[in-house]
Image 1 (cartoon, helix red, strand yellow):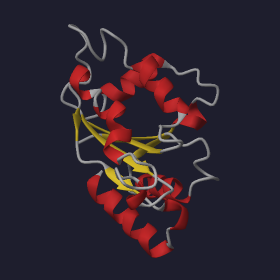
Image 2 (cartoon, rainbow, N blue to C red):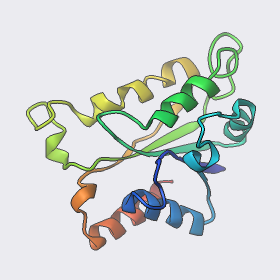
Image 3 (tube, rainbow, N blue to C red):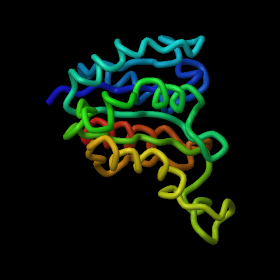
Image 4 (cartoon, rainbow, N blue to C red):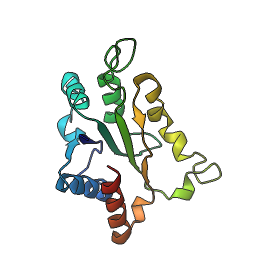
Length: 170
């Protein structure tokens, strides 16, 4: 199964220990890892190139942090630009049908903060809903996401465990 990892972190190499280590582990395991902020620092996305990359894969891994309860801006721009009518959805938009998607989302705060009665009064599922709802127009199949919480205070042992789990699911 051909799998590509799309990382959407504006400071992948310098500002995110968890996302950097996940990307490095995937690269070492032989996966293609695409640092989207390095590829498109000006947000000028090569739509046709991205569509070809997606078409060539059976499984798509979207790896990103959650900032202010949202995905990074480039990820939203990427969806808006690349998932065109007639290509990703619509009567002739069948290019993504049947492809698997795994979301790998990192959160600085702890798991308990993302509950109805938690600090933020919102669940992780609710935060991810704008992404997972895409499946109904595109025919993508979303597999169980890997949710990594508490990254701001994560020790190396737990980080290593998360990296191992990541490599198992991708």
